[in-house]
Length: 273
Image 1 (cartoon, one colour):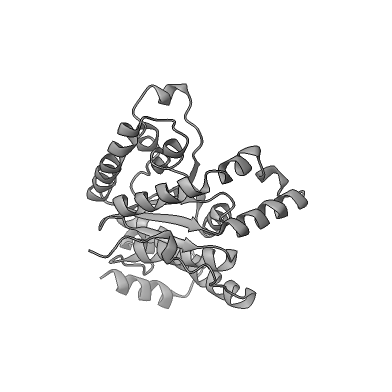
Image 2: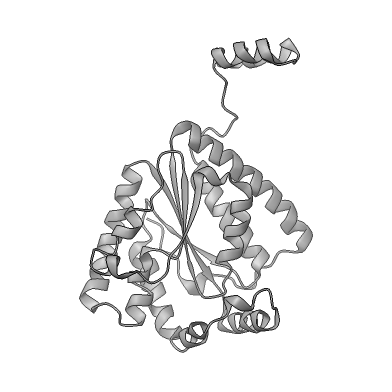
């Protein structure tokens, strides 16, 4: 099995220029649209896990993915602190309830990995429980894959210096100021503990069925493209992405009611045979 990724392996110097970024973005968004149509036709379920440092680019990537997908079968779940109902139940319950049905894709902006990241670092759960969570999470993800789901796990990595620069940008920009919170600064005080927790998480939960992708995101454009490439690669593997054929009844009705060249109808009819 391939060695699990580590934060230190991520090359944070990687960059993309604007022109190349826009060109790649358009291609990837088209591919994502084709993936979604194929998932709907074949009944495949997709799960995207977004983890990473504060201000690392998760939200911007989610927006670019959302632009390409029909919201009727794509759902983003922003995950914060659990309310009392879930505090009294197994921590995976609220994620079970948000898993996609057949043909749909769900994105989790933060996820069940909070148990071995923030809850560990902040001492919000006993050590025994967060250590047990590695096995529970691996079993959980294996069950999802066995049930027909595709899982893509993304960790957005930036340097402490880049994070501080983005905090300053948020402070100066009135349209981004709402993103900046007291917790953002407080979390920086435990950066080293969070790094240790993240590397252990990557080592313990990057499995053959659900591997981790560490996304170098000091350059936002590069990070978005790298993340979207990982999603397209995992979701399109062994899936027919060609436009699906229309059945004969639909083509018969189209021939009756639409003023189109009959050669088009016959060419489509031939593809269904």
